[in-house]
Image (cartoon, rainbow, N blue to C red; front, top):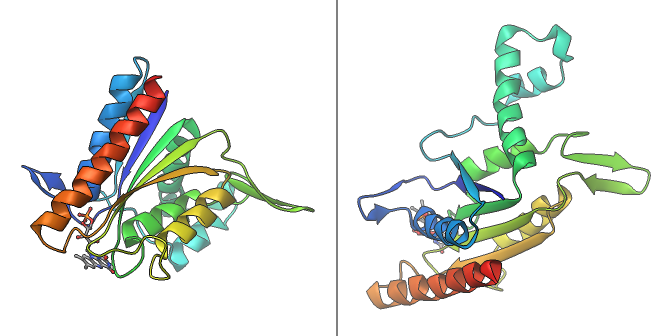
Length: 207
Ligand SMILES: Cc1cc2nc3c(=O)[nH]c(=O)nc-3n(C[C@H](O)[C@H](O)[C@H](O)COP(=O)(O)O)c2cc1C
C-alpha cells in the first residue's frame, strides 16, 4: 500500500510547534503504517518545497508539443510530471489542509493545478468529464482557527470534493480540527477529537 502524504501548510511542524495540519497528517500516516505491514509513505512537502504557480510560461510549456519544448519548458513540465507520477502510484492520499483566508493554501492550489492534466488525470468524453485517478482513498485533515464545519464559510470541503472527484477520487474522508485559535481549551478539544477520528480510521484499516 503506497501512502502519499501532502503537507500544504505555510509553516513546518518541528520541535513540537508549527503546523497543526502537518502534525495531524503525520499522526494519521503513522497510524496507517502501524496498521499495515506492507505500507510505505511518500512525502510531498509543499512547505519546504512549494510547487511553482500556473503562470503564462507554464501554460506555454504545457501547450507546446513535447518535441518542440525548450530545455526550460521541459524542466517545468517535468516538475508537474513528478507530482502526477506520485499521485498515480498512490493507493492512499493523506492531505494536510490548513484553512487560510477561507480557502486552501496557495501551496495546495498549485499542487492541484499541476496534477490536473487533460488526457492524463482526467478526460472529456461525449458523456462529460471522466476522472482517471480511480481506486484511491483520500483522507483530508482540515485545520482551522475558527469553526466552519457545514457552514457557508467552509469553501474547502466542497472544493476538495469537486476537485478530487473530477480527477476520479470520490472516496474522500474529512478529519476536522476546528477552533484551534479559540483558546487553549478549544485547541485541546479540537486536537482530541481529530485524534479520536485518526485512531478510529487506523483501527478500521487494521480490521
Ligand atoms: C494567514 C492566515 C489566515 C488564516 N485564515 C483563517 C480563516 O480564514 N479561517 C480560519 O478558521 N482560520 C484561519 N487561520 C487559522 C489557521 O487555519 C490555523 O492556524 C490552522 O492551524 C492552520 O493550519 P496549519 O497549522 O497546518 O498551518 C488563518 C491563519 C493564518 C496564519
